[in-house]
Length: 200
Image (cartoon, rainbow, N blue to C red; front, side, top):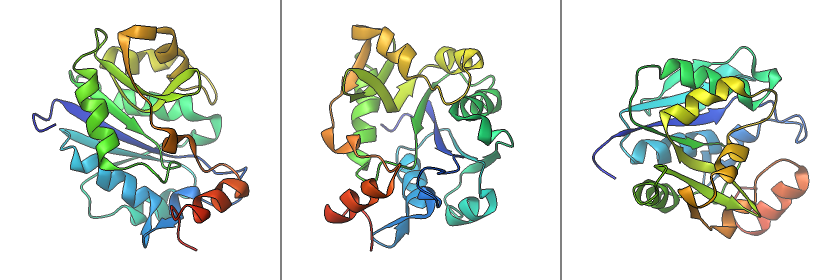
């Protein structure tokens, strides 16, 4: 999409406790996952591009340097995903476009997924688009600022997935099975390595 009516937020604040080391700094084709996600987000030509950091903030910000992202440190990262969404919503206060949300733990994510979400949202009555995860909807997703502002009601590791899921047919849904592999445990790393989605 080239009319740049959206902002993009890369959520990279998590501490990767279950994995034991920063998933954001794993590499695919020589590029850290956080750099890859910020680069892909930037390729959609957003009006604003935010990188939300938390654990290992400086290393992760440095890994994504040079891509034009505004680095937004979330000192409350240990409280969970909701706090990062709330920081991003506050930083985007006054922005009247949609917001593209993506994380750093889906190594199969590519530009065509983000473009599909941007196109799909334009056909949805809610103006939102999300990725299918089983019976639920989640990120990457394109949401309205009203939905972003609703993140103030969230706590802990809850994101906007439940709200997007409850909106049912009002949300355009992207079925991309390859995005169901997200990096939480060493078994996920092993699976991604076998698929060529992470470097050894």
